[in-house]
Length: 186
Length: 186
Figure (cartoon, each protein chain N blue to C red):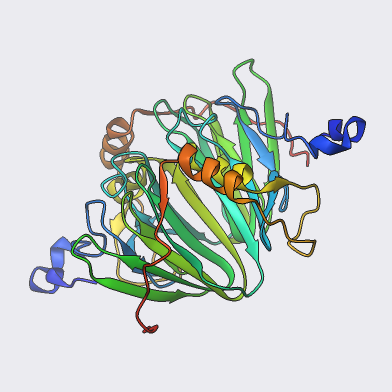
């Protein structure tokens, strides 16, 4: 944990030194990592593409029950959902246009490959472990804001539109706000 | 779940159709996936390199308290440990020869990059989520044997030496049986 930001409070917590930034061994205790708030959710990066030669990154999301995260597509990013606590519904639209959803609970898993429109909603306070193509793990930091507090029980961070657009552009991501989802099934 | 092996019991359970084998969306319930026993441990592949263009694979390990898994190196594979239940000690030797270990418990995380010697020991019955460079997730199937039973509470499978050697060779992996580890610290 690094606290350089104490010298310049406006710059906020810094993540420097928490991850090695290169393929070197390290360990993290539960809750440690590069933490950022985005809306009501805490995202913690445990591993980045810098440690895996760009292959994959890993992050956790700690989130209260909330509204639907609108449909979006990331064209270069494979993404997974593994539920460690709580309940999260994942919606996905297949290449043939079929839309499905699944309520994921403890130990359940979902995969959304690059290029497919998807959305999700935390239906009961959740911790989700995400794995994605290396580099994408930084998205939540770029759209959100750094924090030292290790839980989502803190003021939300609402990015302005230019910040949201810049983060989406940096990750070749499109939002599809008009895409509706059928009533939930399983 | 597929049961073709009922027609030919010797071939054992088949995994065909559990994962899509291509970048397509899918969901798994807790315990679903391609299951294999290796010694006393159940490995379940949730995602393979076939779904991620070779970027990464994901598996769980369900294991009782056990002996040290001897030191080994996989030269092309980055590997992570995320503890979902129980306690696992991970040992690693850095490039400068320094040997460290950490007892990982619920929510703790460890990273071992390609090329570093490491070992691990389940100190209390555990479930660990592993993420690794795509393709490595098949190692446990190649050294182990398919099973339909969704827990580790079943007879162990002890591979013979040629099977072990073939699996290690297929994943560019070396065992270092003579490498000892210092007494455990943290």
